[in-house]
Length: 259
Image 1 (cartoon, one colour):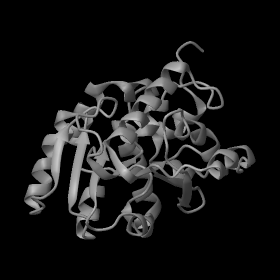
Image 2: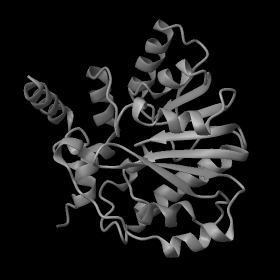
Image 3: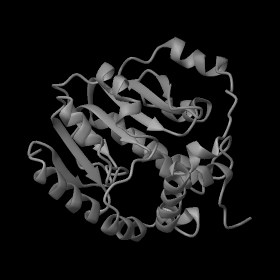
Image 4: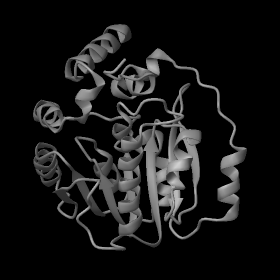
């Protein structure tokens, strides 16, 4: 019985996945997907990292979520008392459906709006927390060698991070919930002009995902030097853990049309 459910779930996920990883970069792909898909969680659901959210986000914080899609991350945080939430997504379909879903639940305080994470339409120092879950990973689709990603991919990631840094209040926190490993992400999080500290926790069964915490204005010499001491962790790719993470897995092994 369990195997049948798992197989059917995997088949369903393959149906909504694009023919190549490059499809994840096309806005129309997401509009089409969100038109028919009610809910999907990248990188595990809230229950796996709830303890980390509660440890780092005080209930009265103003929180910006990037790339909300059809995730229920905002719903879960709201139920935990974090109610000053602004959810954004590039897809107008996702925004419309999210607005209707939240209103149907009576979560009227949560704001939902269309926005590009590479050009955030907010003033400087607007939020105490910015959070993204699997959204930044999309920028690494077709990025090439993870040890030496393509300049255009690096530029997009830095543009996003600079925007996040700008809208964070002094001492604000950026939380990035991601597949990308610390030895790949640390150099980007430590790009010039970004003053935040860097730490992370892991979650997941067998295969780990990363919960990065950056605190604006708290960067130290120790943060700088720790990048040199970082050891590359060993990875065991378990198929059960990766079944639902289609684009992230192909993201790691590459999908470069020039090959």
